[in-house]
Length: 127
Image (tube, rainbow, N blue to C red; front, side, top):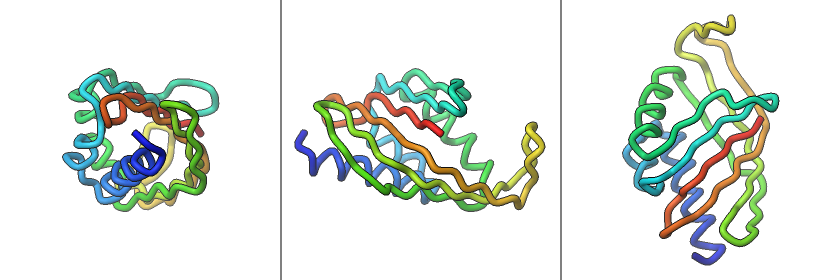
């Protein structure tokens, strides 16, 4: 994949995420996708394989009334791309950590994407 195709695939993934469109998200990932969310240096969520990611993504749609990931920077090194991300969302439910429904979350971080067979095979969100 060339750089433009990689950027376009990430943009499709983020657009689907922002629209809560799990099927469109899944159309961008490889069957062997690995997803990790890392917060403060600890893995807080992981999915191994497309079906596990689909289940996680479907559960996550119930957590927010609105959500948006915005790509700020884009850099490619071989089969990996790294973007800086601004995330904003409004919680739809209370969370075990004390956050409440209706609360707005704003986080900056980065996401790392690895490609295989014109799909995303590894996604790591770091905040």
